[in-house]
Amino acid sequence: MVGEVAVSGAKNAAVAIIPAVLLSDGICRIENVPAISDVNVIIKILYELGAYVKVIDNTTVEIDPTHINSHILSASMSSKMRASSYFIGAMLGRFKKAKVAPPGGCDFGVRPIDQHIKGFEALGATVTIDGGMVHAHASELVGSSIYLDKVSVGATVNIMLAAVKARGLTIIENAAREPHIVDLANFLNSMGANIMGAGTDVIKIRGVSSLHGTTYSVIPDQIEAGTYMLAAAITGGDLTITNVIPKHLESISAKLIECGAEVIEYDEAVRVIMNRRPKTCNVLTMPHPGFPTDMQPQMTTLLALSDGVSVMTEGVWDNRFKYVDQLTLMGAKIKVDGKVAIINGVERLSAAPVKATDLRAGAAMVLAGLAADGKTEIENVEFIDRGYDNIVEKLSAVGADIRRVTYIDPLTSRSAV
Ligand code: EPZ
Image 1 (cartoon, protein in one colour):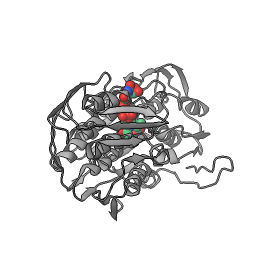
Image 2 (cartoon, helix red, strand yellow):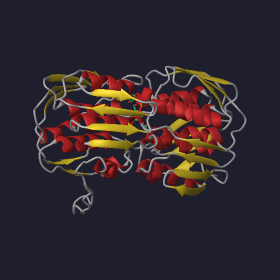
Image 3 (cartoon, rainbow, N blue to C red):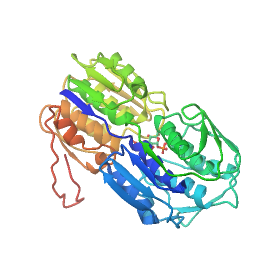
Image 4 (cartoon, rainbow, N blue to C red):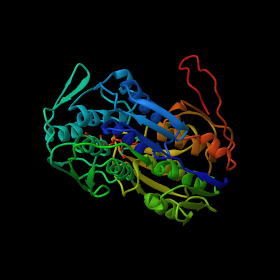
């Protein structure tokens, strides 16, 4: 594939920023919002809570949260995604109470929220789980020091949301450092919050009495960008991925260079050129600035075609190799043992009917299909649509032979690509 692909706004920033609008006393205009189903769901949740939502265009939305008067999120609203847990922190910050059904999200094994709860309790909230709902309430939220036992994006986000209007200073130690944490902090500060240190492992939040409306543009999606970088590598192509922040892609660029790709960085773009079979390399996924776990399935797929044996170690999730069975159907030779996959590179993958087992696994199936001989059909593409804005159109525009096939599977009524 040859050409240019423009990256959309970051899913994991947008799904944290939109619940944060709940904390505002005025209208918030959010720009560069990705057109993906997770964002549509989270906007719909705010609308169903009573917000006035005005869609300006397919990447800009104006939200007036001032009429929201509900602190309850039902299972039907909360179970669709992981980010719905952010409404606990946002509702605590606004109403000092929240009643939220446990979140959904990709299945990588256990996805606890004990660190979220640890943070809420440190701020003075009482949190109980009863009847399948998380109940949180506080007479007053008071700043505190919180050490996260595990680096957690979600806990860092949720504690920030609960702390921005708490009385006094909150310090989050061992905080997540992902780009979307920084983006949320910048968004909250544009509303009048006082947050320092986002992007480091110590975040300081001085509570303020109110937050005003704002206009804010979401950062580019690090993982969407990385996925298209690997699309260039796996097809032996030459792609320029635009609307990116190269600094966010450093670990991905480094691994691609190890695999024999040429990576050229510009101010707001990266160009990936691959003229050879990928070389082997070993990868360990870690919290930012390590190699992102959300790039693990895509990288494993590239290494499945490498010229030797590679080791992929999943350093964040307990069970994030479910998609390997699907790659095996296409001829990959990968042995999984717990958090480690031994990848024995093969010359070619062969097309097969495969399933997206979750969002990033689905993206990996697309990459495998782009490289394989023959026509690969991927089922359950709604997983991919959760996090990739117009993936079929973007890849077609640079030469991929990919199209969305809408047929109704009598058993699951799912669609395929
Ligand atoms: C966010 O999930 C992302 N989702 C995930 O991306 C991403 O894989 C993950 O961060 C890691 O980067 C969103 O931002 C919406 P964590 P989150 O809390 O917040 C353990 C995608 O593809 N943990 O950082 O749920 C947890 O079990 C999605 O876009 C606790 O033990 O992840 C895991 O082992 C998939 N207790 C580790 O920490 C807690 O209270 C990291 O989880 C919270 C987490």
